[in-house]
Amino acid sequence: MFRLDGKVAVVTGGYRGLGRAISVALAKSGAHIVAADVLPEDVGHETAKAVADVGGKCELLRLDVTQSDATETALRDVQSRLGRIDILVNNAGIARDNLLLRVSDEDIQKTFAVNVVGAINCARSAIKIMMRARTGRIINLASVVGEMGNPGQTVYSASKAALIGLTKTLAREYASRGITVNAVAPGFIDTDMTKNLPADAKKSMLEIIPLGRMGQPDDVAAAVVFLSTDEASYITGQVVRVNGGMYV
Image (cartoon, rainbow, N blue to C red; front, side, top):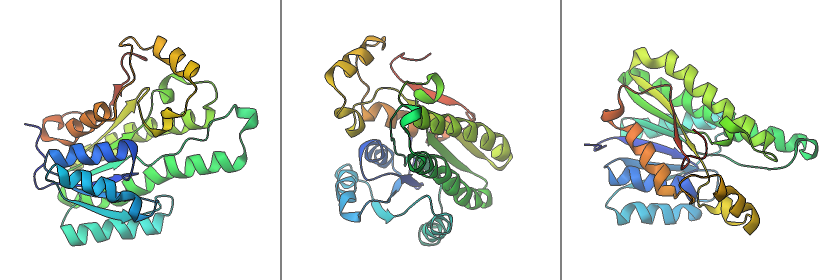
């Protein structure tokens, strides 16, 4: 059960944090990984090594998901070389947190360009390939704040809410082609993004999590793996919350 042998998975934002954990977890289940990221390839070597350490195969792909033509070309090249793209994980994202009145136009545009337009670009390119195969899995990384909101994260939460809308609409549009589209909404996860939070902010956050702890990247990766497998073939248009009960 829960095997992905012979499948090809493209993971955006795959060089660090959740992207790395997701890449490794998919590889453990047998998928061939294409880790795509805007960062220099040398940053991705740790991901490639971590995948190799669990017996998997990983390619590194330099990609700016905000560029639609480059995304189309890159995914078409993956399909040409590997023969398929079975799984797309839209994990690439940025957070530029601030109260709305302090957010710059540049921050708004950049956040939506990466978090929303980037996911749309990748989904559009992948769906063209998946439609021909009449099967595919798309998993979008949303966030608990996209559902419940959070002061100081107006733009980020809006972008993640947009991903949930994208997920539900694509699920309806392409179900007849055998493509499922779901979202995973992490809560307070122990990553580089949360490591620099002040101690009092972490304490306050933990107080509203019923399980009383931060989540780990592997908790999120496990949900992504499940949604990628045949066992999840009757699940589409859903938001899987990985948040320790922070929002139910």
